[in-house]
Length: 286
Image 1: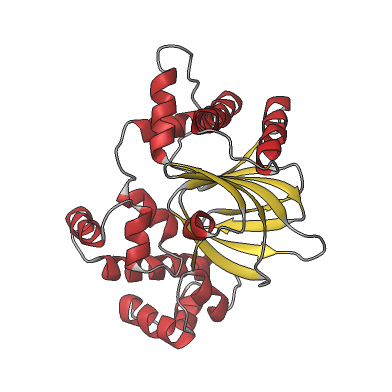
Image 2: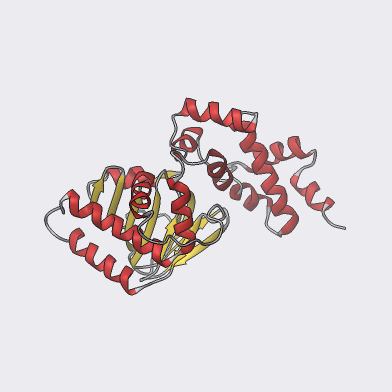
């Protein structure tokens, strides 16, 4: 899978600004693959200027059209691209540090409303508002200008975006408040939302904002087994649920649950469940 945050952070061809670990950019998709997997260590917001793209996470998919906005939590997703029109977007890769700083400045000064459980979503459509539209239009002026705005203006603009999101979505507000109460992402939440993607342990460590050694140590303390064994068991458990509740082929299920090779998937599935995927499917028929 492609490290999307690293690509936008290091690629000098984009119209982009960076403030500490937060990166924002005007982005015209250079990838010509119809489907590709990506991940980001930062949450990010997408605002579509032109074209269409579908983002799929473990618990849903969203197809974005011009004028629509999607907030994605740090993690992985599969994107499906359409080539009828050039896909162009504004992207804001927002660091946890900036979110914590903004929430800290707001607490005690404004009422921070609450929404549904912030652990439940991996991505969330953001309702359009005149304020958000005005914000994106103002950022286009900076992206398409000659000079980079001073850091003092840039950080205020980024905090303006977060305040807009807080005001228009109670669930995002709840989520931001939960981030402000911790210094690192929850390993458990990162794993549960991303185990079915073909990520390396180094990628899971990056998503968790930990070194590889710290990630392995804390993971073993939390789950009482190695990351590799846990991921394998969790993928098989997820695959068994799909087999029991859908008509997808074994090949589709293998790829959807993070296995690159169907025969390897079948061997692992049988080792853990005692049955091949087809045998398991038959046993589900009453």
